[in-house]
Length: 311
Image (cartoon, rainbow, N blue to C red; front, top):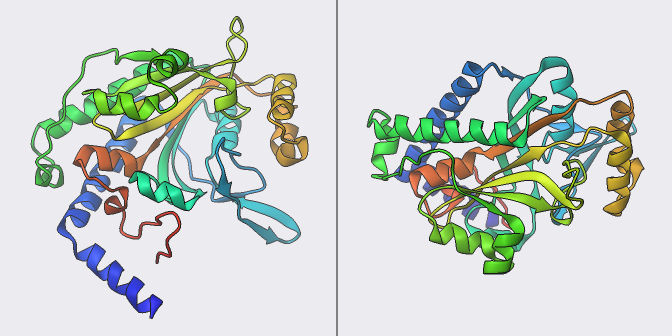
């Protein structure tokens, strides 16, 4: 009985005109993103689906593993470690990375979480946070201008009006936002704003071990989050990366994690990493914002909603 219900839900979902148009729009978005980064000298690399090491994340998710010939492989939550390895050899890279994050069921309420999604993961050797922010602003303004031209039919279907912002986008320090608006500042500010904005200078305890602290502000990371306006929430997360092995190991211990968890990455890092910066943009979240859809599952043909059995 449950199987029949699920199959009928899939049939209904895929026959929904807004879902079909959102998938078409996402195809355009993927093409635009790939073209943009290639035009800026970035090399597209294939994604990593399973690996002995993946992003630990800074919030609770279920953590499935595959036992393969005696080695424990994780499903990719993000390619952060692989990006740091790749830029040393290739300089500037991007990939359309399928990510599996088996979120807790309460995340289904947000309308912006999927347990399986794709992000365009970007990294550049020797780059600063500010350089990456400038790049993202060019990307965002460019795609909105392109859509405003009226030539992208699936976007026209949604009758959505997007503001073309100027540069730079507004920047707000994490602690300042927290003091003024409380713990839920992201949601409050996202609902208030009419244009995307940055949250910068994120406290160390709010992020993973691999991001870089200010030299003169211990405990504050050279990180950034881009937040969509109109209540759509987080668009991307990124920052500069820590590349000193002694600091990496200290941060792992400070997070109450073990070197064994990340031994593959640590072993590589001992041979030398380079300074880099990067970010990841959720493709489904970008599609949802551009189209103005209420629920992120309407941007995916087979959405994996947290806590729900899906095809």
